[in-house]
Length: 65
Length: 249
Image 1 (cartoon, rainbow over the protein chains, first blue to last red):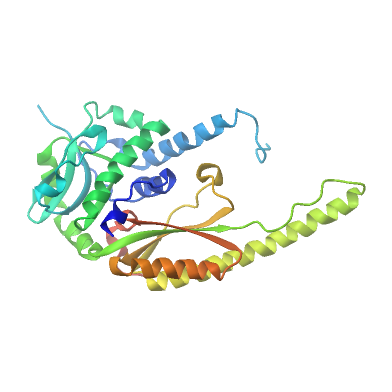
Image 2 (image 1 turned 60 degrees about the horizontal axis):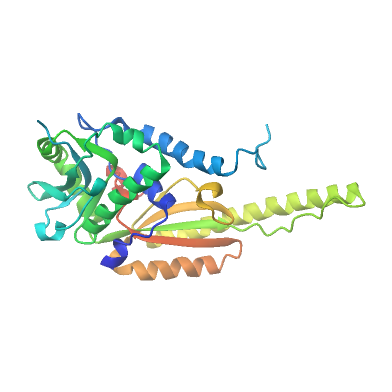
């Protein structure tokens, strides 16, 4: 049980669901702006961009205008 | 001179031996800041903490920071009940952390009481696309168009059936769990998973019934041929930290 909770081999995407949307959001005087909604947007962009880059910049299926 | 602290979670005061050897972001040693029975689990913030935001814009860095954050939360969760904090929470110094515990004392106590003895389980359901692809346009364009429209109708029907199946599984799991919460469905291009993610849920389950819950989830999914299931966890209760979640509506 305790081993299972500290399981490290988790998929990044499942982890980010929790770290970017879950957890208590605290606002202290020096809490970074990244601790809020911005982080979700930034990180999603960070997640999505490399994937698109991997596709060699071609217009993939489904990207019709 | 201040010593900024990165905060991972709030829980019960731990035996310092339990934190020995535990490292967080950038390999910083983890320690606790206590106020009454509450303890915030913290480490030194990265030296240029303002740059952390920029680092998190890069996927590789984000992965490193997220995994460091998670490994501390998971290690502490294995020893005591914790309320995980959102990624990227930094305080000017330990006094500010203590002040925060003082200010939010009752809220944290209520959350800890609710989360004690529980774990979070992730359940993802994927709709399987079972309609065969139409044959390539052949001799008859008319036959092809007919095939296309039949396929469209079949898919629409499958979609409705899948939605009803998701509802059945979610309702059954929700009835078994203490609480449930939903994340956004994961886009296939990010997860690399086959099929469309139609449910990305988290359930709060008594730790002692974790195996039972997992079996129930697998069994429910077996009865739904349109769905494929993926169970993750157990997780620290990341998805159950909202203060008002106590009463299910």
